[in-house]
Image (cartoon, rainbow, N blue to C red; front, side, top):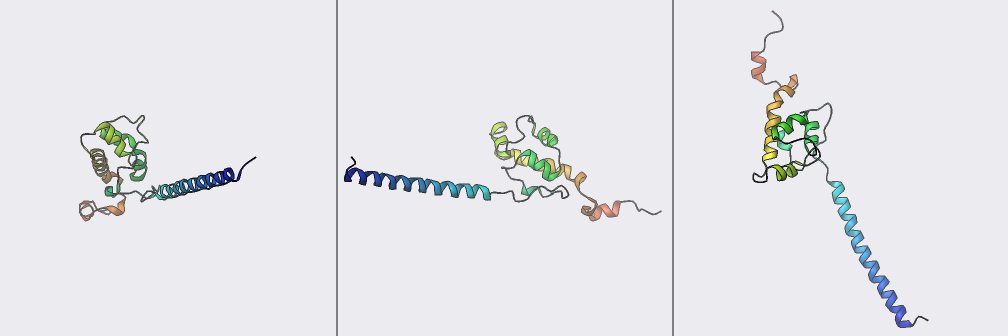
Length: 141
């Protein structure tokens, strides 16, 4: 037979357990919502070519950058001098930590420079500079 003292102890333990479960459940819920809110500042679009390399961050992957800036990932991996196999989904920070830990941020800078070098071939006609229009040949004789 359960005594009054045991019944009180069981009730207290159930209440304490419920508070602990509620506390950690609430923390897990908040953490989940915070992670879900972290989205890229821009999404790769098939029709639009991104040209601003200053938007590149160290959390991005080579695959993501390749799609956003329309530069083949092979070119980016070659510029970095690292193999693509096994590194496709690693962030630039992870690649920097693994291949160039002595120079912080070098991977981001190399990727930016590589994209800047490739940009003249990527820009559509509407992005020509005034110098390009002066030096271009006229369409009619």
